[in-house]
Length: 328
Image (cartoon, rainbow, N blue to C red):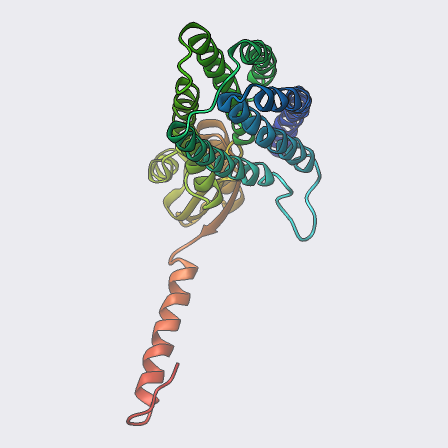
C-alpha cells in the first residue's frame, strides 16, 4: 500500500509539472511573437531618428527573439519522454538555454557600451519627436510581454532567463523615452548613449546571477535551498535502523527537480526494503527530493573494501617492480 501511495504522489507531481510547463511554453511563445513584431518597428525607428537608445533596445529585442525562441523550444524538448541514451530526458536543456541567455545579455551589453563610447566621442543628431513615439509604443509592447511571462513559473531558470530578456527591453524603452524627452527639452543628445549604458549596467548583475545559478545546476551542485550534511544527519536521526549515511550526492536536474544518491549503513537485522522506503519518503516529504537512489549496507561499506583492495594491489605492484623500473 505504501509503495502505491508513493507512486501515485510522484505521478501527481509529474502531471502538475507537465501542466505548468505547457502553460509556460505558451507564455514564452506569446512574448516571442510580440517581441519579434515590434523589433522591426523599433529598428527602423532607430535608423530614421538616429537614436542609439532605440537601436540598442532593438538589439535587445533581436537577441530576445532568439532567446525566447530557444526558451520555447527548450520547454518543447523538456516535454519529451526519456530515451535509452538520455535516461533523464531533456529537462536540462532548459538550464542550458538559461545559461546561453545570460551570455547573450553580456554580449549585447558590451556592444551597447562600445557604440555609446563612439557616440560620446562624435555626437550624432537625434530626432526627439519620432524617437519618443516609437519608444512609448515599445514600452507598451514590453510591458505586455513582461506581464505575460511574469505569471509563469519563476522557479524555472528557463522562464527567469526569458523574463530577464524582456525586462532588459522594458528598461531600454523607458530609457529611450527619458532620452527623447531630454533631447526635446534641451537638445542635449549625449543623454541618449549615456542612458543606454546605464540600462546595460542595470541588467548585467541580474544576468550574472542567472548564469551563476544555471552553471551551478550544470555542475550538479547542491541546490541552494538544501544542505547535504544536514539531510544526512536528519536521516540518521529520524529513520529507524539507519546507523550512518555517507557517499551522499544531492543535485538538481533543471533547477526545480531535486535528486539524490546515498549509501545507508543499517543496523543488523533491519529490513533493507523497509529502510530504503522510509528514507525515500523522508527525502520527498521533508527535503523536496523527488528522486533518490539508496544503496543499503550492512557492516563495512562496499566501496571502502574496493578502495582497500586497490591500495593493496598498488603496494604489491611497487614491491614487485625491478630496480629502476616503473609500473603505471
